[in-house]
Amino acid sequence: MRTGNITLVKKMNKQLVLKLIRDQHPISRADIAKTTGLNKATVSALVDELIAEQFVHESGIGVSTGGRRPLMLRFNADAGSLVGVELGVNYLYAVLTNLNAEIIWEQRRSFRPEEGQEAIVSEMIELIEAAIRRTPATPYGVMGIGIGVPGVVHTESGTVIFAPNLRWDDVALASALQKRWPQYPVIVENEAKLAALGEKWFGAGKEFAHFVYISAGIGIGAGVVLHHQLYRGVNGLAGEVGHHTIDLNGARCNCGNIGCWEMYASEKYIKCRLAEEGRTEWLDDRFSIAAMALAAENDAQLARILEETGRYLGIGLLQVIYAYNPEAVIIGGPLAQAGDFVLDAARKEVRERILVKKESEPYMIASELKEKSCAIGAAASVLEAVVLPPEFEPAL
Image (cartoon, rainbow, N blue to C red; front, side, top):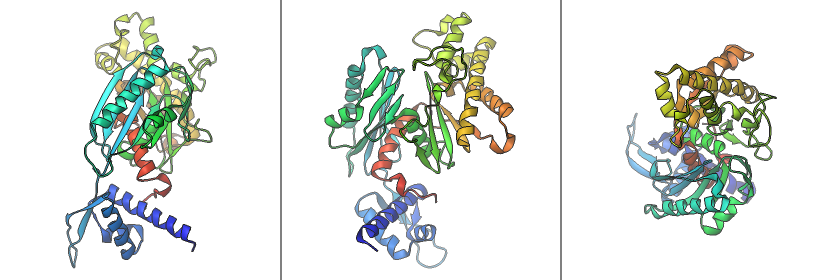
């Protein structure tokens, strides 16, 4: 075997062992060998390296079924810190986490899209600097910065190709941030894809090999996970589901097309219907779908608007289900805050319209990470890139 191949196999085995410890700690060396099929000597050598690198530590004595009691191993979530940022249409939300996505610090700031790209990027830099200043002392310090953006992103370059709700075109965001922090990896990706990654690692997607995360707020995006890995498509367009047409004579979308799905299953539609129904008391800067859903418990008009939105969500979801045939659909973003008003209406539409009833109807569930899913997913993208690359991630 060539030296390069030996090195690659060792790296893959090391990542395999680290992932198993992270997922199943506390765990013994013997159980790692049994689960992975690696021999005990190989496991011991790899564990010793991971302990020396401070990604793993011994945490006490386990229970024996016969013979010497084993030393148990744990993943060291405090080996480093991760910065994750969600760039929303009118806000920035940043988190500083450990390697288990446990939040150390967080902050949200609002902005107006008309402030322009330079002002928004400047605000983002200030927010990231605030996160870095609060990084605790760890062996590796800040291990990288992840950014989620509501638009089409060229993943390799970190360029925002098109973000219609921000009116951004060809913005080299990763390059701008990398100039400010050349010492850190910077990852820029679509916000729904990163939210899917967050749910995959730490939320409602942990139990599924194939799922679609739907981010529904001002717009709609999707993150697709197939065989435990994020699916981007040929050039990053996989998941841009908000712009498939569901009404040829419908409203014009910010993308330039007419009748896009996100014009009907979104905050835009809810606000439009509130205006049509004369419920303008809900249309100020304090608008909240969560508050509206609470009021809808005793207000049939508000309940009807939310249920209509849920029906449109379900109608559009059919195309997503037919395209990817997932085990589960996870609904996140502000629309998920409407709870069963939206989710039950969407489930009903899918159940009544789907071609093959029981076999092909996926679980439809709410996000576990809620409004933090994108920022935590952005942090997870750094973890995946630097510590646990997906090409070495087996389905154990």
